[in-house]
Length: 135
Image 1: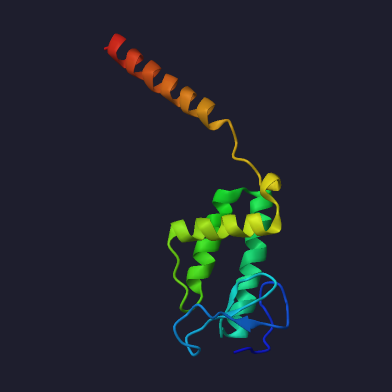
Image 2: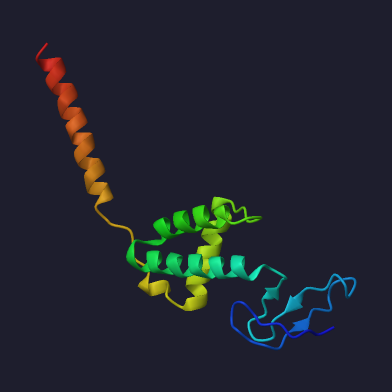
């Protein structure tokens, strides 16, 4: 069973059906180029999802993966019939990063967190020592 649909991921026009499912009416439609399942989704929702993915990739490059995952999770959950867990959102963002080949370009988290924690801990110890010695 073959249909002519446009793949929302790669834009390929020709599609084919999978034959590993029990019946042809249950067989998902696969894109021969990117091998992703093409479902009957509202074009407006699909366009909104593409915009969210683009914004997520920009956040990955500029603000880091943690901010991008948080943005992706909140925006996808705003769409009707789309509810992701944080783990699924992280996996989806990592899949987007790998699909676009920008793994090395994603901003790494700052390395100053350890220094800040050390300073706060030293200030806490110093204040405890000060209060016990001056009372």
